Image (cartoon, rainbow, N blue to C red; front, side, top):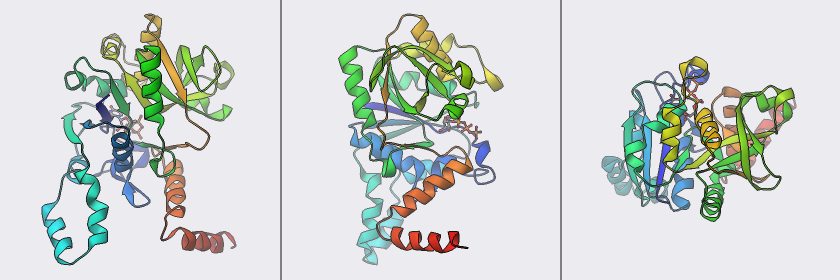
Length: 291
Ligand code: UTP
């Protein structure tokens, strides 16, 4: 698989005012903006064509993946080799594309904007606000590709086990079997805890064949007038398509940056893992919690 789509057009209202004029996907977690972790994860998995679905006020994201020749020249003249190395990610062997979602009509609508980019090929969707694994060291996308190739699926979705009281915040799987790889009998958007078929929550990574676009075309707007990706996946399953799930491992947490509580936690965890500053930060936090 060579194509991936990263939707980054959301308004990020839960992170206001931080996101008033900058994309939430560009907020730093530790040393890097969130979306850089996602791009690095995809490129490590062999992806070399990446389409961002963007919206207004997302220019900083385009600039981030472009080479800033003036900055490179200045750092070179000053002999700042370490900082130059930090900017190497923009020379990774990937091609970046951008298209606009003209109205923020939901994640499903954002994915629809990728239709002509992907053509007849299967493709990955990686949400721009979720990092998988500390420092994005996960190989979940490769495991999903393996499942896709082995099982002749129309879609493969990553799932994370969440506590029972959190199921009402996510799309939840009704799996056919136990195990790390399973077929889906159904998917339910934000079920009540008592009615939830499992505690396996959709975890920000998907592989789709282009059949998803037909399903999206038949998806009626749900909550808030948005076209939900989960509803389209449900339609695919109802149509008889084979949709599989792959579980994240226990050490592969999904860091969802969509709200301040999980953003703060992710930042602290990544900062504590920082080679240079992690230990002193840990000592500093201990002094605070000692009060
Ligand atoms: P969210 O569901 O977290 O929505 O998006 P949001 O609009 O960004 O955030 P809130 O709810 O207002 O705080 C999940 C991912 O899908 C993208 C977002 O950019 C994010 O990476 N998205 C969402 C789109 O690209 N377009 C949309 O219409 C909605």
